[in-house]
Length: 242
Image (cartoon, rainbow, N blue to C red; front, side, top):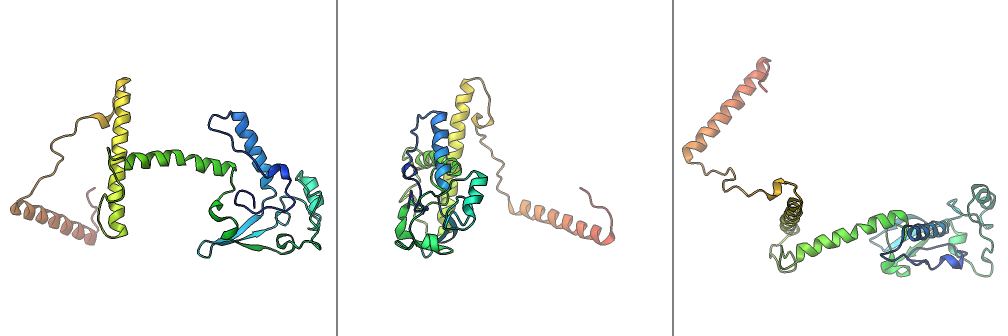
């Protein structure tokens, strides 16, 4: 197991530990890291399926998937050489040490083997880095949402029962947080000479009117008349007004 993923037992030792570049790493260092990860991923077993309820997953030998060449899998060495893929130089002695990954079509690995290191994408790969990079923005938003001086959405904020009610409160809080952050950004743009609708003053009248009983009845009658006229038009085949 390397970084929460099963690999061929003959994976080169130089690829077992690959240090991830730091925050201030250069573009060249990041590309070099991904190149090493790509090379190591060729030795990674292919995940065929995963059962999160039972906490296990099924994997297949990388040579049987066509990513490397191995003497234990007939025909893969010649194919790997022709495709420029790595080949296993010192394959394990399966008679002395039986290895299920090499001998079976696939193997089941339980969560005890990888624990919390299990991830949907191969660690360090380019797609992994792209998704993991979004975490910075997500964590920043949640930090702003839970800040006691802002929306303060956190434990004890509300006492509503039920996932639906809690989701509504979280959605309203997130919307308020978004508006606040957008307004803050708009104010910064205003200082640079840019106008934005979000920094306009809110109107006192938002178009809400409390109707009297007579006014409500009049509107209902108007709607009923329009609906009846539409039904007559449809039945008569006359064109309806847009």
